Length: 367
Figure 1: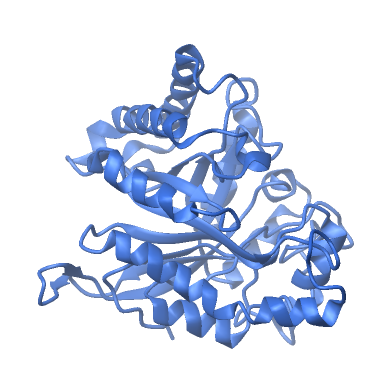
Figure 2 (figure 1 turned 30 degrees about the vertical axis):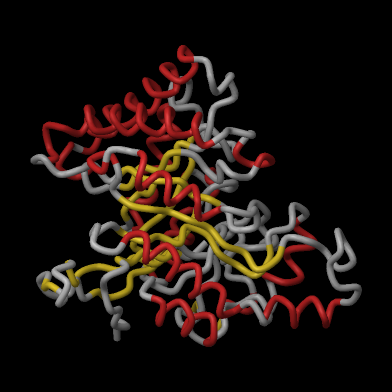
């Protein structure tokens, strides 16, 4: 998954309305989740790191409490290696506290989860130092509005979890924050369900602003196979339907950006790609082909929207010979064909990314 981070090129200015205006440039990164072992501990990990450095990756999104990630209590050495691998690439870790499987309305379960998250942050400060860790990203939950992925949590339940976890992260980082909010955020909503934007609005308006460091959201053009659940009956029509949604990527960024106006918060597109079917063979037909490589019109749409352009899924595949469904590289470090060009990976094409920008800011492309 390729990530995009918009960083400041010059000092902040103000618009006529007094809102901060921060010129930005683009930085890219990836998701390393399901195949974290190959990325962190596998025999070809250094080749993978070199590929990601060639793509100028600046953020690496990773998971705990889901995606087969190492247990932070029972297997801290593996989690430490997972995080260290991101640092070896030269990227900033973006750590997602994905979910817990105890009753969401049980205060003891929420307290347990909060303590686990805070302990991870504290352990990171012990391992790498608070001055470094304070600039990492900490995300609460993954797609809470999707029952399949988020576990069926309601917004009211999510709000309670978010506030307690954010407070726990803030406590662990307080000696190094100098009074600024920690870089903790959410809600990482997926874009298929109705009223997905309500989750963003409610988080911004019902949670203490001092506990919100960024907003994260996801978008895929399609989730169904051909002729599944009312989708088009043939591949060509399905592809045209997906391509017709290219402007939607920018529109979504604008919708979130309007909610963030005047707040100075990063507007992060944490995941986007052409297809997100649960079967790798299905989504791979759309994502792992020239059709699935982000097209100039999608990039133009997101760039003009005020959010950095991005796509999103996984950087490393689990198999050594093929890269399933949404990945940039196989576990042996070799890129799949649409990512190749003479002389190395096609750095001008990025599959699976996080887009990070501030809604008030014009975005200028880096040379």
